[in-house]
Image (cartoon, rainbow, N blue to C red):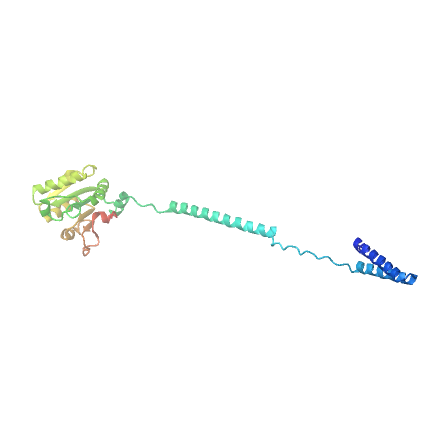
Length: 266
């Protein structure tokens, strides 16, 4: 058992002294009375000893639960893994973009398209009205001749690859001069593939058809359906230029709204 508290012993002695004084005042001097009082005091002391007053305990302050080190580590690892996964995903996407760019089909050049469309043909004849020129009939050429700007690039590319002849029906010599001047100002003769001697003029549609048959081209480009029909048996391939889709006259006749459209330049 714990040693007797000093305060409790002092209290027991005070009780004993008070008891003796009371016994003395009342004349209780006999040994029995004194002994009884002493026993009472001792009993009180031992009672305090056995049942001491328990001091009140302070309730410990409740502290917020602290995350364990393992939980912190798990969260840290999860964060790192998430960031690492995001970084890896970004790198994978970048690598995939590089691969896609590398294997993306290369757009063919105009020169490649011309060769493919003309099936490697080496000689081409072409009408001027409605194909190279904006004018569509010989009467208009008596006033002016205008080269279509959108057809220039294709026409110059054809002259680099093929032996090209241009031809048209005119009503007078002045119309012929206007056509040659318009072609020269457009720069068609500067590429070296086409010269003025390869621009042919005639006075009838039949004469133009005769020019084509004599030259025996691989391709003839024409806007007159009657001439197309006449040449279908003699020319390997023909391209019919017309604003509206005509009836196909033969299996070797192809159709397009314009020369540049046929080569995919529109």
